[in-house]
Image (cartoon, rainbow, N blue to C red; front, side, top):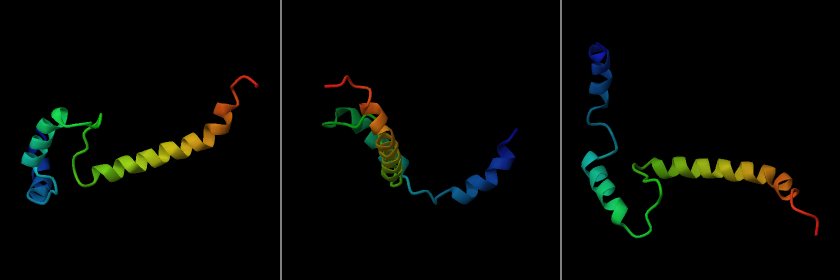
Length: 76
C-alpha cells in the first residue's frame, strides 16, 4: 500500500549509508563473547557521540539536583 511512496526515498539513500550491514552483523555476533562488553551495543560512527551527549545531559541534571539529594541524609 505505501510501497510506491517509499521507493523514491529508498532509491536516494541506497548506497549512501555509512553503515556496512555485514560489519554490523559481525560486531553483533562478537559482542557477547568480547571482554567487558557494554550493556548496550553501539553501532555506527554517530552512536558514541549520541551516547556521550546523553551522558553529558544526565550529568548536568545530576549536578543540578545534587544539593537536594544530599540534603536528605541524617544530620551528623
